[in-house]
Image (cartoon, rainbow, N blue to C red; front, side):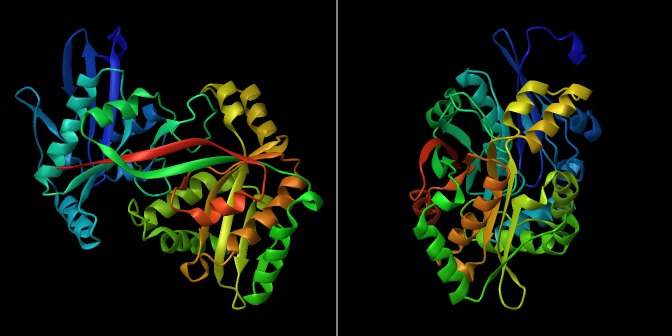
Length: 384
């Protein structure tokens, strides 16, 4: 069946994330629901249709992709690589199947059919439970939106309709991890909370720390690998954690570093010049991406550049703090320094992007500023 000839076709898609594995599509034509096998579709076509070039997909062992056989039943033969990944997951005590890229029409029967394939995959590999939606690593988009449907989404988060969570709950899934998102108003540095400024100064002196001010992007490069290592150390105790692989680090460096502005990167080092904390923020591209609507024309490039250089909104993207320095006020140093950047670039509103509900330390910091907790998202889980 040629995709261009299909009319009135509703599509949902999902990728099973153990072990970087399966693509499947479900089509709804009237009352008929059919699973389509994607073995005949080349990885490059999938990448180009999705608008991505992701090594997490292109390096997948194709022999574990599910095959359609006798209606809705599936069979799969894990490759040697797949078996190694399954063994590694069990070694780090993450005996679960993860799913993501969950897009579905408002039809419970469709969601049920698709998620049943996830459960079958988990049972086949003797896994304990299902978790999702998540990405390939903790750097990818994760969680369904469960509050703030009327708000603009940031570039690195997922937007979905309210019925998504309703479907999962009706299918026996329960909440697993929850994230809060805040919108914070930025005042002039002189008018910012004295408590934060004093606390930042005390912590810097007590632990003999210093903040790096980069003159150009080349000066950031020696710290990039340290940033990714620090992310692993920061989040490796979280229930949703999956280690970041070297090929993933290279992918993120090549894809995103060119968009980072030196002023929006803040690093804190100890007396031995060891990175102990960092944050990466960027001007908000939300409205610019809406305007370009997926088309990169000369005028749309102008919209992106305008968002980069003339913008009153920004977003936090990554933040990492070494475990030895967590709960010791390091986030106050980071925000105190990044506020100077926001003032310099006329940023008046900043969004935090998802922060785990359990991260009470950072939430206490936001109480010192005018803020609103405007969005919430969650992952869901189910025993199998």
